[in-house]
Amino acid sequence: MLRMNKIRLIVVAIAAAGLCAADDTGKVFDQQLAGVEKEMVPLVEAMPADQMTFAPTGGAFNGVRTFRDQAMHVGAVLYLVSAGILGEKPPAAAGTNESGPAEITSKADVVKYLNGAFAYAHRAMNSLTAQNLTGMVKSPFGSGETQRGALAITNVSHVMDHYGQMVVYTRMKGIVPPASR
Image 1 (cartoon, rainbow, N blue to C red):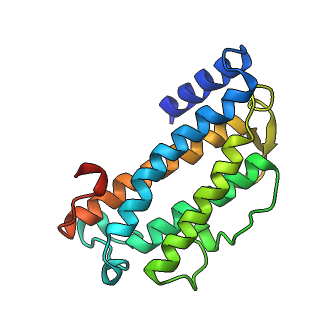
Image 2: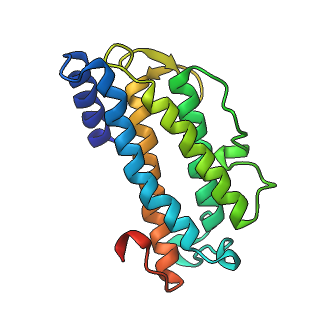
């Protein structure tokens, strides 16, 4: 958490100092989001439909989310955080505990939900400017406020956190992640 706070501070300081042109700030964040999207979506697509409910068991894996649940959680948080950046109501349901809509169960629908979340997140990232990056907005997680720039970093770091977990799942099923091929 300390490392993430340092990263947020650096990004906010750069933007506040005007080192990013106002019209380039959103582009910089959007490029980072595009990079993680190019790893996450193909990973979800690589998991066979009949393995979407797979979750490791035993040891430190007891009670973890299924692969489908991980993908839906990533999408739900992208929707919530992006809505926070934009100051809007999320356009898709985040579900209980940021798990996405429970009725979405098929692989095709999970991929569709995730792609929709990334599309919305791109809109949010592109709305960022050097002037609004440090602006305070309502936190999508409980009460209080947070900076738009901090939410933008969350959009990227949270995806990669779950990507790492999901890579373990795919490798346990004998699937080499597309980004590692």
